[in-house]
Each structure stands twice: as C-alpha cells, then as structure tokens.
Image (cartoon, rainbow, N blue to C red; front, top):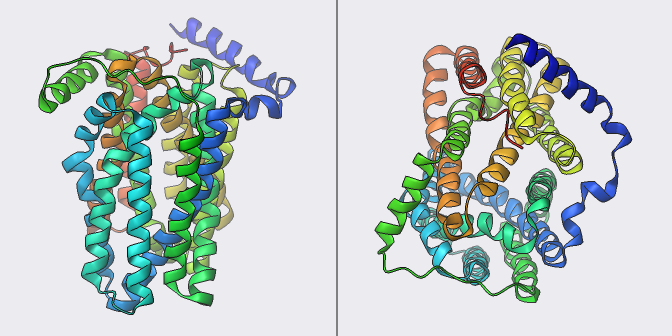
Length: 426
C-alpha cells in the first residue's frame, strides 16, 4: 500500500508541477461559454453583492436601535430556524416544480422583503421585532431557494462543466463577500441603512431578468403518487444507502460542525490571542476570504486536469493542518498566511463535495439530495457557533480551535486509511 501511495503521490506531484503549462483563462471561465449560465453568473453577482450590503447594514441597524448584542443572535436564529423546518421539503418541491419557476418566485419574494424593510426604515417605523419577523420570512424563502438553486446548475450547462460552474459560483460569492460589506458600510454612513436595503431590493431584478431570459429544455418532473413525506423519505434513503454520497455529505457535516467552527471566534481571537483590534479582525476575515477566492479560481482552472478525489483528499488534510498551526501562531503575518491556506482548502472541500454529489445523483432525485446537502451545510452552522462559543467561554479560544481542527484531521486520516473511495473519485 505504501508503494502504491508513493507512486500515486509522485504521479500526482508531477501533474501538479505541469499545471502552469496548461493554465488558460478560457479554461478558468469555461462554464461562461453557456449562455444560460452566463446570464445566471452576472445576475447572481449583482444580487449577491446587494445581499451582502443588506446583511451588513441590517446587523449594524439591529445593534444601533437595541444596543444589545443578544438581538444579533435573535435575528440570526430567526433566519436560520427555517433551515431545520423547511429545507428538506424544499428539495421535494425542487423535484416536482420547474426550478426556474421556484427561483423566480423566491428571488421576487426576497426583493419584496428588502423593500418592506427599506420602507419601514424610511418611514422611521422600524422596530427590532420587524427585523426578526422579516429575517424569519427570508429564512423560509431561502429554505426553498437553496435546493432549487443547487440543482438548477445542471440545467444551465453540460455535465463536463459542472465543477467549473460550481467553482465560479464560489468565486462570485467570495468576490461579493469581499466588496459588498464594504460598500454597505460606506452607504450606511453616507445615506443611511434604508438605501442599503433599497439597493439590495433593486439588485434582485438582475437575477430575475436573467432567469426570465434563459432558454432551457422543458422541465420534466417525474410522475409520482407519493406524498411529500414519502418523497422526502426516498431522498434521505438514497443518501444514506449510496456509499459515495453518504461519505461526501458526512465530510461536509464534519467540516461544518468542527473544522469551520473557528470562524465564529475570529473577532475574539484578534483581540485576545493576537492583541489586535477591529482592523486585525478585518485582516483575518480578508485573508480567509482571499484564500477562498484563490481556491475557487484554482478549481475552476485545473479541475479538468486533476482528479477531483485527490484534490478533495488534499483539502481534507490541508484545512485542519492549517488551522492547527493557526491555533499555535501568535505572529499576525503567519496567522494571515495560514488562514489564506485554510480558505483555499475549505473551498476545495465544499466545492468538490458539491460537484461530486451532483455527478452521482440522478436528475429525478437531484433536488432532494441537494436539499440534504444544503441542510447539512446551513443547518449545522448555528450549532458549530454554539458549541465553540460555549467552549471558548469556559476554556479560552485556543483549546476549542485546536480540538476542533484535530477532530477534522482525525476524520480525514480515518477516511484516507480505511476508506479509499474518496481518493479514487474522478
């Protein structure tokens, strides 16, 4: 086995060193050659930019009118609760109703919610409970939007462009994440929060128009007499009984619940461990986001030349190792470098798991499988924040971050040693 692994490693390293000769911008943006995906990409870029503006402005508005950090938690909980209540059913709906129709409805509803919040602020009527209710309503919409959006990618492209399209989606998201909050802060200070919400509402027009202009093959929902609950059970059973999808979803669950949990503590880490301030926290967040952007562009550029399974395996080791070293670092430049590598690795894990799950999922059940994937990804985030925040309160920041990364590393080692299925995936 050691000889086999050494030979495989040598071959993979040789291919990795030859990548510079294979790089082309055309390959990086390969999925954009499909007109439908091109419409989606630019429409989503504008819309997600507006969404980040709203999230930034909304959080600051909540704190401004309540002077209570607890209300930030209430709003976050209200937005996240519908994931547990509705997202799995959102996958059933995505297999029964044309996904473009679902997305037009969800994006239009989110636009209306943004305009309602803007009107309340413009009229000086906004109260904390308004924001909580609107956050809960937005969470319900997103519970139906996320599975349809994930499954819809395959309707816009051919299968050979799937990994590239998912990587470009991540690049687009991280670009908007880097620029949207900054723009939101500037507009909030100069014009007030209502304009942030108004601009976000207007930004949804871009993706709604893009969806309307697409020329898609007719959507053929499968004929079934099953109830929603029966369809949901079928989707869960498929994931649990499919060995490849099961382990990919488990990888996402472990990474979300343990590996990625450290992000919750970055503001405290900046002050307590690195003895910095708000700017230090900004640097840490930026380093992680920049790494994620680079990772997404790397996958978009070279996923056709490298084994997805090998890249995913590398990511499952690189991510916890970089966080373990980050937990030991007290030197800001080194901490930033390690977070940069963690950002690359986290995108390798999430992007490739997403692509591989879709590759191994039949079209008739894609919505339900992707709803389970989305449920694990979004639904476990609040629990990750809850456990690591409580542990940090009792033990300090260092021990929980080190322990969480160690759990992720043990999981990666166990999969590598006892189940070679992931590394063999193409």
